[in-house]
Amino acid sequence: MNNFKNFIFDLDGTLIDSTPSHVKAFNYAISKSSQKCAVDFNYEKMKGKRTIDVMNELGFSGDEAKKLTKIKQDSYREYLMNGEVNVFESVRECFELITAKNFEVYICTGASRHSVDIILKKFDLDKYITDYITGSDVEVAKPDPAILNKLIADNKLQKELSLFVEDSENGKDCGVRAGVKTIIVNNPDLSSEGDFETFNEFYLTLKDSI
Image (cartoon, rainbow, N blue to C red; front, side, top):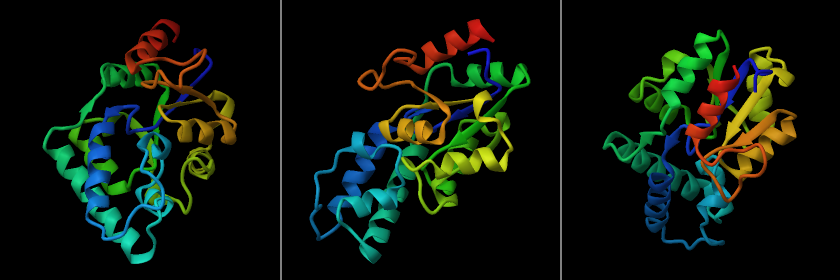
């Protein structure tokens, strides 16, 4: 890992332990619709995607999809502010290590910009981050590589010097399709050689190598 200078992180499930709150918020929003889902809701398959895209995949469209997206986002932000979401172990230490080495931290997430702004300020992470891109900033998000490619292009980064840290299959697909080295944390079911079962394991390995 001593070959990388740009560290690009997903947010939900990678840096913050938000999966239970997202599942709860999605289920609450879906329960508020008089329509039924066209497909079963499986968060693991949807993880990393924008809320509006998930709603569309579930069979909601137009104004109904927009309404449910707002309900879901508002509910999640309520859970966030109520303390139901926390930063994973060693995230701050990892960011401090990277910036102390004069390397750079970036965020690439399908979450809305408003939610990301709240999260970064709430957990005092914004001071470490050079730039970030959200699902609000692109027409298509993960697993499409456009969101990651835009972040890289906007900041004139070299892909061979960039590492993308993710927790989802959609995120990994995004990184692979963008041609950026991608590793998985916090998802043992998806992990393979070179991945890490926890963020802390990633941090400890990084600490020993840069």
